[in-house]
Picture 1 (tube, rainbow, N blue to C red):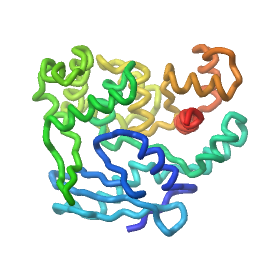
Picture 2: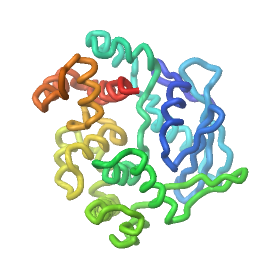
Picture 3: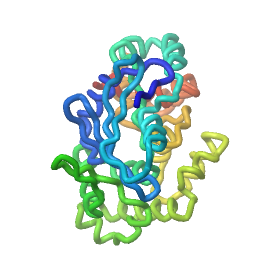
Length: 291
């Protein structure tokens, strides 16, 4: 099946980005991306590739235990943020000189979302203050511990455990994976929130305002402003969300603004205020300034 984006979309640019990641929940090979998921207890393995049609992608279901095309297409559209009107961001970006070069180089690049709220919460905790390579390795250890995968053509395609399954772990179990004690406690706390509904995706999407959702998230032990904005930006999709304090964002602004040192909090807040509803995509393209 073919899915079309709302505005510009370049699968090749997306693939190049995904190929450089080490997320154990999908595999890139030969210009195609494969991912396994569970929908209503039914496992599915699907493959995403470039479409012959402009601004689109092709989805092929390789293994399906009864979930059906509809849920897979909705998932992929969410994952690649196909419904977002990217041309509106580009119209805004043309009024901000910071984006002139990067939007040309990465034209059609969209946010790669975390569809699963448990996934994004775990990642936003594990990824705090450590290098990306080690963060991806810790995530792999946690995912593989539960042994959920689809085997296809001799390869294992891993599936994220549920929040309820994470709650069967102890802090010591995660310490053996080299996850710090504090992060292990935070993961369990967030898993409990997903289970009881206070951190479910549906509940977070019910907030009318970005500020209200952010206040709710930062009131949860283990979720600071950076983590809250990652969740709101990459899963709930509040378009104002910007991970304030992100090192990559500071480094990118240093380059685009020709600063001698990294910008301070007040400087960044002024820029974020200007970005407004385009903050999430502005951040996304600022990260691309770094390559």
